[in-house]
Image 1 (spheres, rainbow, N blue to C red):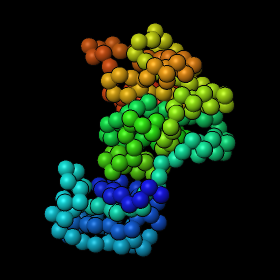
Image 2: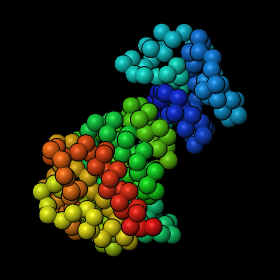
Image 3: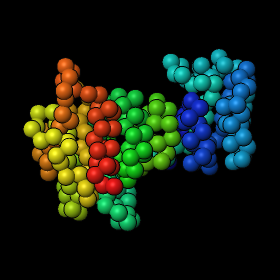
Image 4: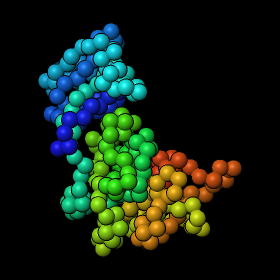
Length: 246
């Protein structure tokens, strides 16, 4: 366990109740709000025997300052991020070719949350990120992910290059996104065991990460902008891979 953490927002709290209710200790609701979406939270909490407390909105504002909590905050015993050993167990247990997302140093919690949500939608088996100089599973990440943070294993590793070598030894094709390459995404072979590697905001992949890619691909750009937000680029690449794999 990583200890207690606050989760806020209707989608994030509903997802926590659906997927990990045993770790939700109490839910605080805006006492002035009584509508269908709030009642759904109340019903789900009752189903799983989770304590509900109705409080003044200012108390929720104090718990989640600068956050759009939508009138609901849950206190949870949050699981720690998965580790390298867990990744090998996940790979050993798969009955289909691995489909992995690697995020090399994403630091914006909104971007990580969006990437997790897209990874869940695309059927990714695990999301891998370095432990240092990258954002972890913060309350903002969980809210933006809308339940995907509880559904997709998020594995933090101490040495990303070593992890990529392990994947290659297992026959996983490592494909890195790099705007400087000449090979288009739509020309790449994305079938079979795959780890899609996306770089951080601004600087992209680190040199050592790039050197551990079997192939580099780029998203073809036709307009005036030179690059896309990492979460948008991740979505494009993941669903192109999904299209090929199915």
